Image 1 (cartoon, helix red, strand yellow):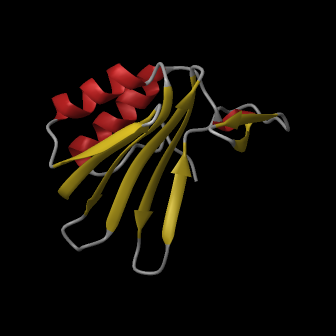
Image 2 (image 1 turned 30 degrees about the horizontal axis):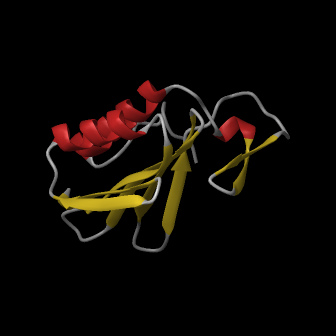
Length: 128
């Protein structure tokens, strides 16, 4: 991945770090996941195709998405729990199906680490 950019917004503050080290990413996740906001990493493949990972979080709830560009479209995958439900949860003012929301911050750290190291996230963490 080329030119990674770590971005964040929480409780009225925000910022970015161009070409962060993993320690920068990990510190931002640890410091903020207990609050309310958004953290993401964006980058490009060696072929100039965009990729990003983002977590939205509020009240101990997480929504994790991974997006990537192909020659034809932008594809978004997200972490989803296997149970089907018609229940909805509001997260940062948006309404989501409850099976898209989870409470384990270790999943967020694992997905961000995979993305940081490889530019992708494994299928066992994200589904289409």
